[in-house]
Each structure stands twice: as structure tokens, then as C-alpha cells.
Image 1 (tube, rainbow, N blue to C red):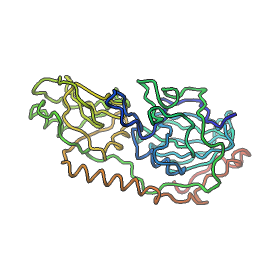
Image 2: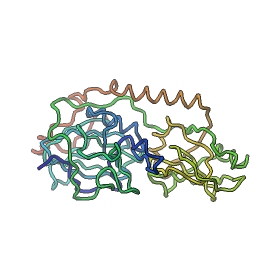
Image 3: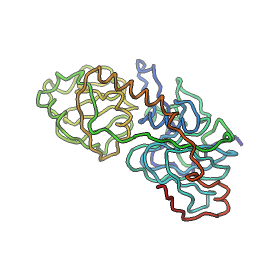
Length: 347
């Protein structure tokens, strides 16, 4: 049987994502890709993959996965979650581990990821990646288009995600130090491109107000609840291109920030655009989180983008051996029930 991760429970919304499907927006094809590309690339670094290798993007509640391979190496970066390693499918409890690290599991063992906190998404990378054919150069799942990823949809129980590798490389496990995933106090935006469609009071409201991430948010757009923004010239424009982070304001005056699965064109005026350096942090915000904005210029946005690229380039230098003191016990100890109810003194 070919190596795979078998889905015992899919979680709320678990999809395969990479850095997106670029170059096809002129054909009406969404970019998709990770909501938080920083955490995606960090997870890949922990298992030794190229930065854009496809991984699992877990939203809100995680999946339960069984290993149908000799052994696999997984990593977990992003939201806080209860990550549990079980010796088999019948086990009720297992060994808890922290995120920001890699771990090696053997055939038949199970990883169970609970509810997420502090962020919307968690990324689970597997050494070697998934053996999934790309669509237009990417394995990113675009659910609305029903293509990419695994059968163009979120995972369901019974899926077997094929793996490139049947066995993990023989090395010690790694952890990632010093990666700050906290959101900024205010998200930086470039004003416009249709600022003239809003009254002066409307623009002031947007920049002075505090909004909440609304329950209607999804991978396409983040709906914000808060002070209504006044239009000055109506709320319909001739449809034009949608950039990542575009902040549209429809007729109800409540802004919508366009995210990874955004449409390629839109007919609502855009009051601002979140700068690219702040988009990963934006993608982490859970429903109910507070958000506010500040205007910056193009030079500041470009400098922030260069700083983000420098931070991503520095990721390998932040990876260190897990070390015996913090290492998870060998999976074979789990098999023999030699450890139970351990308290991590480092936590």
C-alpha cells in the first residue's frame, strides 16, 4: 500500500495549501494558498522542505490523522492547540506535545489536534510533502472552484493523503525559536485606490475606528463589524482588479478585507489595501478579534516587505535541535504505556 496520512476525523476545515496559484488572475482564477504564509514556511523549514511545499492548513478545530507509512515526520506551526500523539486508533489518550517543533511517528500511530486558540490557523507539514499533482503549478485548494489540493475540497473522514516519502530521514527532531506570531496593534494600509468614493467623515471613521472580525469571515474575505463608513459617491464602481488585502466597503458601510480565496475583480469601492507584510498576521486573526488600521506610504510598505522577506530567510537559523531534555519520548514508549500524565517543567 502506498504511504499516506489517513483521515480519521477531518476537523472543521482542513485543506492542503501552499503559497498560492499565481499568474492566472487574468483568467478569473483565484490565487488561494495559505492564509498565513509565514507559519506555512516555518512548518516546512522544521521538516526540511522547500518553503512553498504544500501542507495542511487547519482552521479552528484540528483533524485526527493515522500514519499509513513506515514512519513520517510532521511539524506544527501557528495557533496554539492540544496536539496529542496516540499509539493507535483505539487509544483514548496519548502524549501531549507543543507546537513549533517536528516529531516522528511510526506506522499505525495517530496524531489528534484539538481546538485552536490565539489564531485561526495551524499548519501541519510533512517531510517530503504530499504526492498530489499540482493544478496550474500549485497544490493549493480552491474550494469554491472545486480544484487543487485533495479533490478540490476540505478533507473528510476516510481520505488517504498520499505521501512522497514512505520513511522519514534519520535525524534528531527540531524546534523553532523566536518566531513572533502576535498581531500588530494596528494593521498598516495604503489608502485607496477609491478613497474619493468615501466622505471625509467616512475615511476618518475607518482609520479611527476599532472593528471586530465577524462571524461571516472565511478564506475569501474577512468581514468586519464596527463603525459604518459613509460613502460619498455611491457604493458601486466598474469592476476592477482585487489585490490581496483590498478593503472593500459595500452599501452597509461595513468593511470586508479580501484574503487568499478572494475573487479576481470586484465592484465595491476600496477604501484601503493592507500592506503585504501585514497580511500573514491578518490571516491569523480569529472571529471576535479586534482590528484597527493606520495609513502608511509606499516607501514604508516596501521597507516592511523587505523586512518580512529577511525574517523568512532567517528562519533556518532559528531552528535548533529539540534536545533530550525537551524531546518527546520515543513512539515505542507510547506503545508500551511506559509514560502517562507527565508534566512538562519547561512549559
